[in-house]
Length: 391
Ligand SMILES: *Cc1c(COP(=O)(O)O)cnc(C)c1O
Image 1 (cartoon, rainbow, N blue to C red):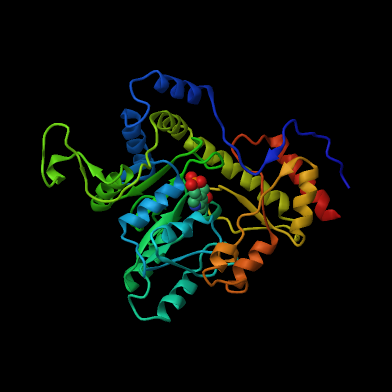
Image 2: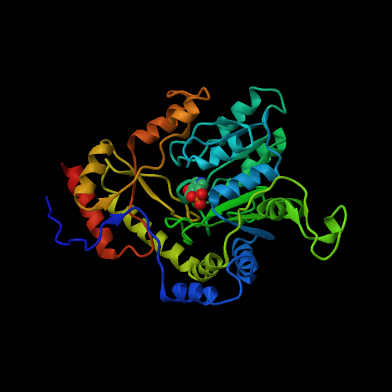
């Protein structure tokens, strides 16, 4: 049994932000500017983000959950409507439907990828009359993009809208039937796509989020909903009392992202490709390191994987989690299946409803993966996992 020589100088978490001097400068410059919020950095971030994703429009919001809420509102979710998502996601992907009074339904996962299984979605859709379900929220879990072309076809067949939860997959892509790379959030297939800038995500601003779309009608609606449902555009107003006049036309929210954080996002976006390349390099190194260990099973990989998480499945997950903690390695579990949360159990879901998601949950562990993870730190993580597995 090899004893690791390397000793970490900091606890190694499963993910963390990377802030440079340029990032700090961008924030400080904005603090000295005329606008702390509703200023020019918001539009600049939106334009650059939309261009990076290849979408027509982008709307910056206060966090990823607010992005999901606004999307559900813009698509008209209301009591009586039913929306399908995956049990293996952060609860917010499902909660947005509940905020609007809609019903959340789930389809089980494909065990090879832990993504929602579109065959299971089809089975669910086919077991009710057309019109029973209203929307689908696929999640690019761990950074592996869902085949949105196939998902779109299914949505069109059954008359559903689609929100892509791309929080894990900025820069990721899947390959369509024509062999073209389709980047997550590019607006080609999903009606709306959402992103988060929480510190563990690819672009980290503390709190922050973004919605991308190619649909102008939804874009206009999102802009209004983000700011209280108020418009100042005379062309959209029912009357005009004077220069001060603005109109609150529906019940919106304050879900704005401030200029300082947009400046931080702009600065980070310039390094997005670099960070993505490093994530893929680290993931390839893990793949190679575990190739000869049957007890360590990584999830499927593809060229377009954006590697938000590196997930392994092991027989004794709790044992490994606890062992790594004693070595200052803070792995994490993604995710506890949403339908087993007490809140969702209160709505009638039960353990046993989605056995593949539950089997995945019993063995999964996300091990450290972030661009500033050093080669030495990664080797230490690998050595510790090998040591545990060797018993
Ligand atoms: C992070 C995350 C969210 C929510 O984003 P916040 O900015 O934390 O509100 C939603 N869905 C997924 C899959 C996420 O990873």
